[in-house]
Image (cartoon, rainbow, N blue to C red; front, top):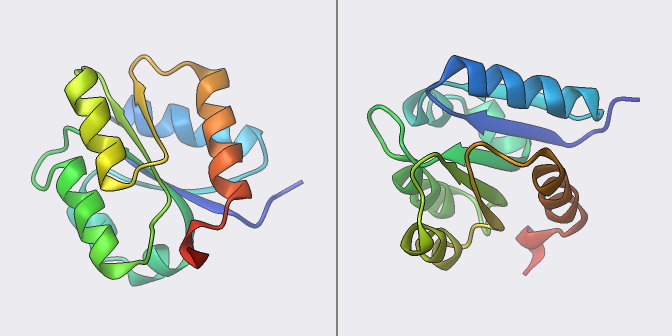
Length: 128
């Protein structure tokens, strides 16, 4: 069963993009994947249709944090999960201070990711 929520994944590592997309699709979600913040920001349809953004901190070009800040300028309360292979407590605190729903270290725990996705999609943050 295909769910109506579209999840956008932004990560410059092809294996991470593909792995997350495949996992989410196996759970019934529709996905769009991007290797950079710039390619996502150029896709107005993706921005309008996204129910959730999963964004890596370290991207080539615009960083994941800069992307999330730009999303907050374009979308009220964008639902986002920030991921990173190099995160620490300061990275976690910063991600949450920006309004991210969760910060998940790589390698990503699948159950934690899916729980975060379900929570994010169950809460319509844009109405706040």
